[in-house]
Length: 150
Image 1 (tube, rainbow, N blue to C red):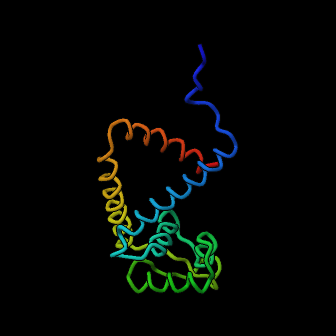
Image 2: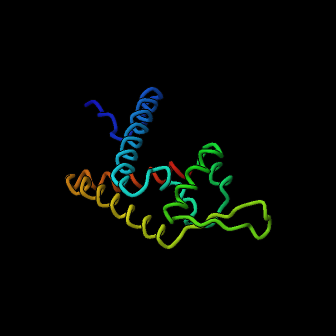
């Protein structure tokens, strides 16, 4: 009697590489789709900048560094967010040459609304999966969260 290969046998390096590429593309596509489901209020790059300010105020330079964009690009983003009433500028009490950016209450509500829309978009798609696929996604979510934290 021949043994059947284990369902959980380690993948060969070439298969791991292929899986990694396919997984990366799938994650990128989902991320892109979710981001563009709620672009009617603000652009994705503006949402990202606002999210960075959600936990703590910051300077335009800090935002540019975190977002990996140029200082002039972040200045344009911040200027637009100020115009929209989502970000306020204030002098840094420690260094008057610096500007500190904070979110307005309106911005916090916009973030909440966008997240609700994005979650609803994803919920519809997940609800159309069969129970086995939903269980697989539950396990995959835990694994992907762990991978992202490494």
